[in-house]
Picture (cartoon, rainbow, N blue to C red):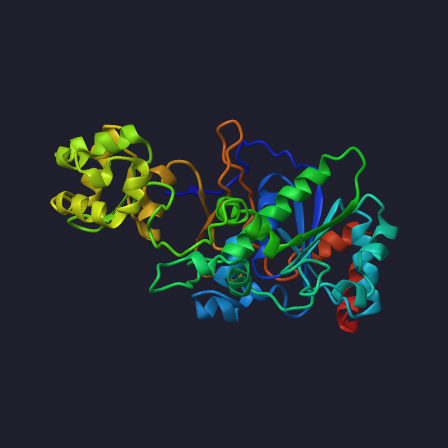
Length: 407
């Protein structure tokens, strides 16, 4: 099902030698750095002393939350190192500046202006390292009338228009069932950072707006409005671009069928023994099938209800009609397609956790190998001695910094 991580596996590490300072919390920023560490970067989580990433206290297991190793943290932080720093303490600011001198990238997802108010904003850190790529992820971007608004995933989902088109006419607006905006924001940031690392002249400020990142992924929906003047609607499981295309009921649950081409429609109707539908004037053309999609659905479900979803999916795919049963999360995680491709990685119980943990890697392979990391998610401040020691800070000085509240 998953790959047990015992030693470094063979895979491309295109970001090897790149040091990333991860000052982020919860999901968008950590997910960005999750991609970077799997592609070979050294990612150092620079966490608030005494509490760390808020995700350490989030997740479905209350005991792990109490230990500061919540499931939400475990999910996105394998392979990273952790140091602590108090950015409100002068010596803490000085430590961050010393780290920045050694870094290629810094990622933060505070509200706009927070880092400046702390005295460690981009201009200050740029003076320490002119080649620094500084990536700021925020809900609405670093400028504009909404820049100071607080932003969580659901706020962005609602503001972006996503919720207005999710569900159907009875259930919309509806939240997407996972943190879509955080994830898209994180992926967008990772892509921008990777691009900036390839620039001939290193250094610069990357401003990632989660709102804009999400809207940018809605190209078809947005363009239907901007170009065709058609306001997007919530259409449930129907694919508005074609019919029959959507979710259909079978004997044991729903199935997705995407007969988007005319020839696929003919094959579907013929294979179901419903050649009568090919002669029905309501379904004679693509546009007519879209107009009469509900009537067409009812006709097809009369036949589809005689067998189960998995049977129909195998049957229809065999004859060239794209189809697939609608699976639960446990079902897809145990499916051979996922289990055999190395998407999941299992680590022996990390410090502070009472069990082995299985987490998701990235959806990428390099030369047939899934990018991987060796180490499990770190406990808070696990790498203080090593990282700060490499800056020339002796153990006795580290102890003083701890007592003084700088780390």
